[in-house]
Each structure stands twice: as C-alpha cells, then as structure tokens.
Image 1 (cartoon, rainbow, N blue to C red):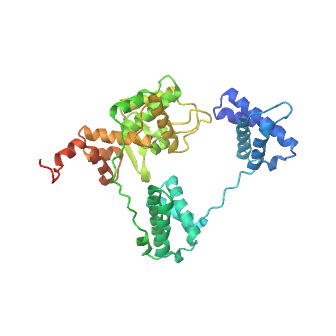
Image 2: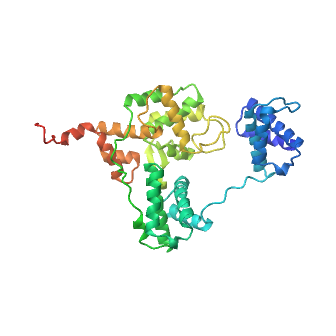
Image 3: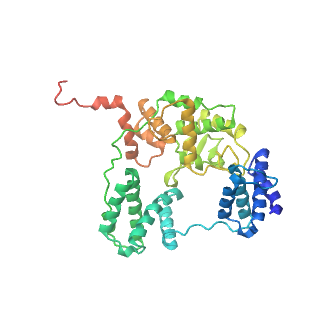
Length: 394
C-alpha cells in the first residue's frame, strides 16, 4: 500500500487538513497497512469489515514501531480506505438494494420532481413510508384496497408522532396520485386516506424577543473565522427570514453585489430575489474575505474544519444556531433553532405595523393561508376585535 501514501497525502492537503492532522492520518494509514500485511490481507480484499477488525485491534495493539494506538486513529485508516475507493483501487461498498422496484421508484421520483418540484430530501422522507406500505401490501398497486390503506394509516398514527403520521398521509396521497395518473390503481383510492385531526393553526408560533435576537448576533466573535461565518448565517436567518435549507443551497453566484440582490431557491424550487441590506452584505463580505477557507466548492458557507466542503444538510445550520443559543445564554422556547429566527422576524414585522401580505412576501409563502398563523401573535390588533365574555358584564 505504500505506493498510495503520496497520493493520500496530496488528497489531505487539497481537502484543507492542517499539516499536523495530515501527518496523524498518514501515520494511521501506515499502521493500517502494516496490520493488514501481517494479517495476510491483499489490497483488493480491504473493505468496511476489514476496517472494523482494525478498530477492534487498536485497544490491544502491540505492533512494532507503532506501540499502543488510540481508537481515534481508525478515522485516518477510514480516510485512507476512502481514498483507495476514490482512485479505483478497491471496490466501493455495495449499497443496500432498494425496497421499491427500481422502475417504479424512478418513475415516482421523476413525476414528483416534474409536477411538484420536490427535492431529494422530501422524496427520501416519502420513500420511507411508501417502502413500508409496499412491504406490507405487496408491490402490485392493482391489489390495493381502501380498507388496507386506512388500516395502514391508523396503525402508523399509534406508533409514531403526530407530525410523522401527517407526513405518512401526505406521502401516501402523493403516491396514489402518481399511480392513478399512470393508470396503475383505481382512481377512487385517494379518498381512502383518512384526514388526521392535527390542526395547523391550533398552536401559537414560538418566537424570540428582538433583544434576544440581537444577543444571539452579538455573541458571534468577529475575530474568528467561525464567528464571521455564524454571524453571517444568523443575519440571513434573522433579517431575511431564510430557512436552514436556503443557507445550505446558497451559492456564490446567487449574490448580486452590484444591484444588491440575493437569489434564494426555496421550497418547490421556487426562486425568489430578496434585497441584500447593508448589514447582511457587510457580514457576508467579512466572512468571504476573512473567514471562508479556500475550497473548490461554490457554496457560500462551508465547514470550518477539514475537509472544507459544503454543509451536508440543513441540520448543520440548526446545530450552529443551537450553539449560538448556548453561547449567548438565550433560552429556547421550543426545540427548534434556525426556524425560530424566521418566526421571530415575522412576529416583529406584524407588531411594527406590517400586513400579512408583506410578511408573506418576505417569507416567500405561496398562499396567504400559510401566513395566517402569525395573526394570532398580534395581541394588540386582536384586542380590538375581541368580544366580551357573555357571562361577564363589560
């Protein structure tokens, strides 16, 4: 394996690893190679199972020249194994066979992207429920009946949370619409999916006070690259009402510096232009000049530690905002993090006299009905229309 160490070192350098960290990973790769050689393993036989065996070897390691190794050295060995896969020396791990028929799954995915503009994450969410349905009822849609579909939904309501059950009903309706459009099942089956009693406007949106939002932003240190990045992210969430997914998908070419616009691709691949304020623009410039590491990625925000790549999902943004809450010692009114700032700007706009239509434009809601939930937090306006209780004299 020694012939591939130089290429591994170059890969670590290109990914932005510090010299001391790269040396540690290369040393771990050398240890892994020496152990595999003593085990009589060929280069072609290396795989994830081999890496697990090496991981169990580390606590009791007595290898010459390496001594007792730490468990975290298995990370360097894993990076080396991934490097061998990338250059085609060993075969990558085989992915698990999909539960759905490949043709049916591909056709459903294409139909959803074309007619609904769904992203990959949404299709993965739907796929979990549809896979369970086909595993229980079989993969022949012509055999579906109303009783089985209703029973499947009601059983899911008892075993999972309310919102997960709501997602299940949505996934099944979309799947049945696809099957009906393709003529694979009866057109009346869509009505068999029951409507769960989960009222969207039954609760109040959780939000932060303006002073708490400013404390979050002020807690980001302008002297560190992470602080510059976190401040720019928080301003995009708190001033423009972006979603966490919008932050992940934001690209360098989406920012129009000359005209002061920022292009955002939201739900359903709906593209919108939002004004780039002076405050947000300065925070982005400060991060791009002094906080963003060198990388080939065109994503605006990337990881602060090697490998310097774009965020894997919107969960990374939620983690960043959650750490800011802890650092600023601001109590979260609910489990959410990034979306709290979106709720907060909508609430603040209403209290300052903005209309629901103006809030809907900023939040990029397709329907004003989605924005109606924020009307419940405008207590001052609600007092004007509130009627006295009948049993109490005014």
